[in-house]
Image (cartoon, rainbow, N blue to C red; front, side, top):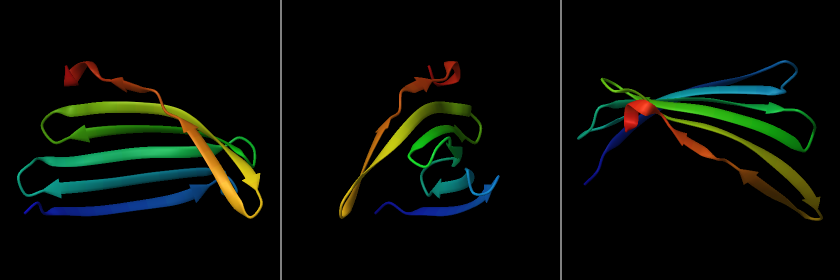
Length: 92
């Protein structure tokens, strides 16, 4: 049975336009992993996102950059995102 321990923290800056988050996770059968990312609100509906992932002993594993746009449709909210992924040279 897989067992994963996770801990994270986040905070907002610049009048809540920038959200930064960091978390670590430890699987019983794997090295300690970490994730750092952020989201910046250019407008009320348009957001830019970025993130990096790494692993203890291996360094960077993956980087991500993307954006999202929120469409208000009464009574629900529709969100879309495009997140191209780039593997770092260290991961092969």
